Image (tube, rainbow, N blue to C red; front, side, top):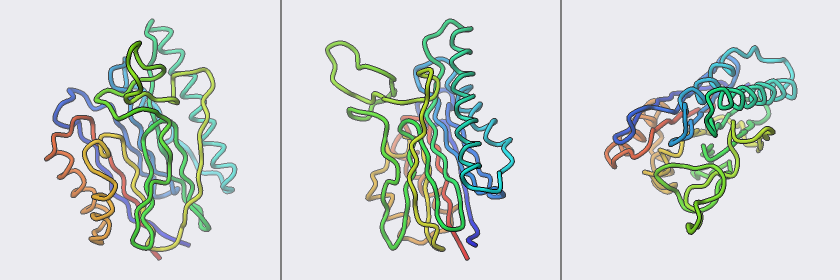
Amino acid sequence: MSRFLSAGRTDTGKVRHHNEDALLMRDDIGLWVVADGLGGHSAGDYASGLIVERLRSLQRAPEICDFVEQIEDTITQVNADLRAAAYQRRVDLIGSTVVVLVHHQDYMLCGWIGDSRAYCYEDGRLRQATRDHAHGAEDEVTQFGDAPAGQRGGGVLTRALGAEDQVYVDWVVASSRPGTQFLLCSDGVNKEISDRELEAEFRRDQSPATLVGSIFETALARGARDNVTAVVVRLTE
């Protein structure tokens, strides 16, 4: 059975006044999470923090299907709570994106809502395992729903926690071979660093902690226009 090495970090960045990202590393139960509260909306830090708080409290079920159901049930309840909080505060939306990585001895599972990403590095190549629930180009502030009248696209999410009464997690399967590595990140990483540059960092064969440090050094040096969060997980023997 594979073991793990993991490291993670979150930073407000150089422009934003508040950090609306949150992360979770549960090596003990094989669960890692990055959540990104929606910038420009009310209480994004509350939304991302609630996701991480609830998932942190999980006790892993023995069977993988049951554990995935636990995660989905938790996310569904958080979605309902965010909808209720927005109604009580009389605001349109309190929301967040989320990406999760789940370990099984035979495979890894990546689940996500929104544009927080999971990457998989295997056999010298980095690929994006998730597919952003968004359309248009990246923007300084991610919005949910339709673009403003007269504008086309531009960082518009098509799915987020707290945005609609029903929420759905997409899942993909990835390798669990020893040596495989994963990066979970908020869009503050890919706004500053290209996929090709991320792949080059992975090829340097750094420890997860050193790799996270390199990612943050680059993102902060380039202005870190958004909150920056990254978790790196390496599977070992």
